[in-house]
View (cartoon, rainbow, N blue to C red):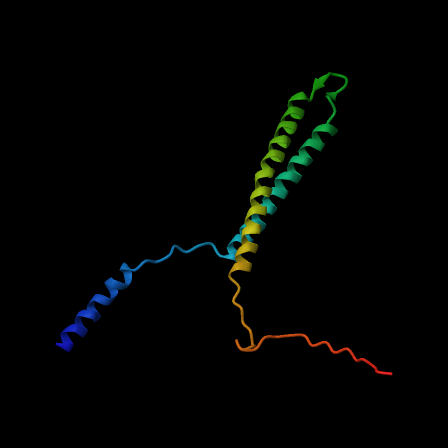
Length: 135
C-alpha cells in the first residue's frame, strides 16, 4: 500500500506543482531604471533636435537669392513645424522617465532585506556620559 501511494504521489507531483498559483514576473528595479534612462535620453534627443530645427528656422533668410527673389518659406515652415513637433514629442518621454524613475526608487526602498548583526533581545543605543565635577 505504501508503494502505491508513493508511486501515485511521485507521478502526480508534476501536475500538482503546475496547478499552484504562480505570480506573474514583474519588472525589477533595474529594468525600470534602465527604461527610465532610455526614455530620458530619447526625450533629450527630441528636445535638442527640435530646438536645433527651430533655431535653424530662425537663422535661414527669407529669400534664397536676392537677385531672383527665390523664397525659402517652404524650407522654413518645414523646419519650424518639425522642430515644434519634436519639442512637443519630448514632453511625454520626460514625464514617463520621471514616473519610471520614481517607481524604481520605490521598489528599491520597499524590497530591501534588513540584515542586522544585533539579536532581537538587544537594541543598539548611544551612551552619553557627562562628567560632573563637584567642588
